[in-house]
Length: 427
Image (tube, rainbow, N blue to C red):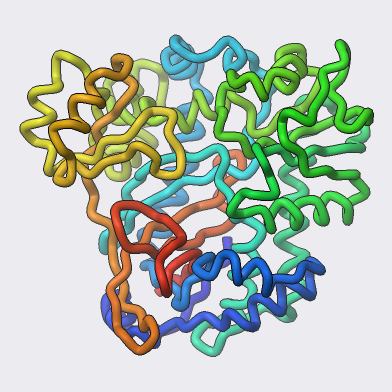
């Protein structure tokens, strides 16, 4: 969990008012990525100029601890049989299968307000871990950060080893001591994805550990009756980057057939999305009496009471009341991703509201709006306030890496000059 600690006696607020604090050496970052991963990063930068932000974000230690505690508490509660039975009632049958997997590369997104952290959402397809590990290593060697790494390559290798151990752990949970030989990194039109460079990084990571890896569109997979194949070769594991969370699309059917009978180790599995990332679950996590009835620990319930904003599903019965207080709410689809079809209540039009009410009951949740924090950055000589959130990359309830995302507009977008992924420094 790389966090860099300096500026003792300097407040987060003061640092965030200084557009020159925590400047990120992006040229050094690109050089480090190119050296460590043998990828030509300048062309990727030309296509994605706002992938990495110009400045770091500073976070107080109590907020860091609150985020880590929340992640651990949520995953402990998700393991309770009563909780699982409740949230899986409406899940796709594929999500009912339990191979013991924890879900590789989970992401928990927070807004930090002072010393407090508030959970915004949970993601099973949280991209950016490997590029942000490199970003953290470069930041650790910056003159404004303490505890520098001994060498950038060593830092990269340590992060890579931790990520590989996560996939090896997922493999062993379902396959025991059998050898892992082939992995497919799967997404729709992977070469066109915004984080396509990261797919190449994962392929290189697997290769370094003796695992043959391919990057594939789900349509390129074949179900052969007893095994999944890619270009005629059996596939042992799939690193799932699809936003077709239940594998219902026609293009996902070969992968679904393999997953249904356990012929492939699929991570993150649809069960992980149903248990953790379905936004309807945020309402369940805010019900202390029910959590206690399922056997949740009192300390975990108290943690969620501090961290999870009040959330309600949109129904015909509460639609009028939610419309009346829409300005203090944020509306989002339960299985949405990338901020699609998500709306701040104070920006909501009558027309959009009518559309939201026409969706299936409980398909939209209304979450108490927690304004994102901001920091001052210099964009081409023009000081500008940007919003940010904090993402925790996790596995099995443990945070391995924090990163911030700077942006303007309603939600994170990677289209903001001066914005993008940013390292996190604890103050």
